[in-house]
Length: 424
Image (cartoon, rainbow, N blue to C red; front, side, top):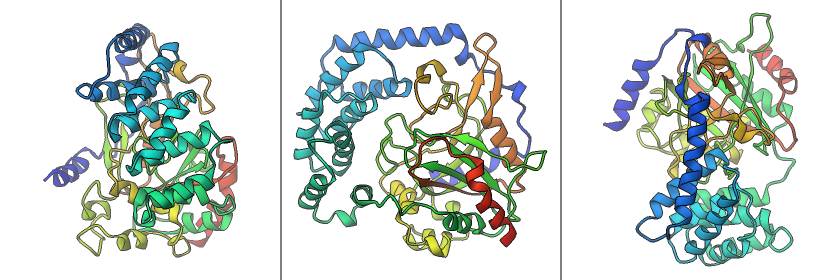
């Protein structure tokens, strides 16, 4: 019933109307409200520092961890929270342990590495093991390396190859830097139809997701959406979570792979704002008929229908299956949206003025803190380009193309785009 209602909702809120930049307003961005929000975080932080962590209030603490992460709250008190959380994590369950390690990793607090190592050594929870692994490889590179983790992985989880999370963790630890996308792979991806008469959005990124990615849109006829001057439409987009953990882990980056596009909507979440979003879903989040737009062969989830979506040359490329397995492990609610976040939180980050999320794809928006009006918005540009594509149902492809540094540029993609258009 829930999946049916989602399908009805997606259909009912789809609109071909262009989005007007000047019609959008948010009280959340007003200067006085931002100051109130900052004061509230600091007040709550001091309150949490004064109270104990117990088995009965762990959920409340975890919720506060998420709030601190989303704002990258810069305060000495955060490190005190991390120390307190990691001490409690030594005797807590996997959910709190993961949240505490994620908090430490998000704020690059490596002073609690010994406590994280204790959990890494003792845990039998695969999500916790994966989160601790990524923390330790960054915190103690001179003490623990990929070889040690691989040995521990094999000994602790002998059937790791059959587990979605551990399969991708092993891939991360053994990936050859020369195995990512080349121009030929991009051509195959850009020229592939996926399904007849569907719009395809491509969001392409560096392996290091703190570098801004780029988004382009292919229309059902095989040509790419263009600007009024004939150039290829594109915007910058960020596929990074605040934690920077990989997409197959809870709260991690946007997973690579195929997402279905099932509509547009306006979020009620203040930090996302009133700009319309593109509603995407991953496998297992909805039923196969909705995901495959009624073109599925099997009524139940199985890898074969997903595999059939991919170009022949990429059917065995494991990273493109990350969204499938992330859905299998429970990731949900990853969409393409704008942001009303206070940009001052992120001024020192390489992706500024983009803002991270909990795994969604975000576009830059600049708001007037005096009037609450939207000044500029790549999300509005994206929505209007999407509306112009001719079909508001289709697929989103998220893929890492290389290990380079710096934003992905349209110049890098143009040869493959032109080759793909010429082949159709």
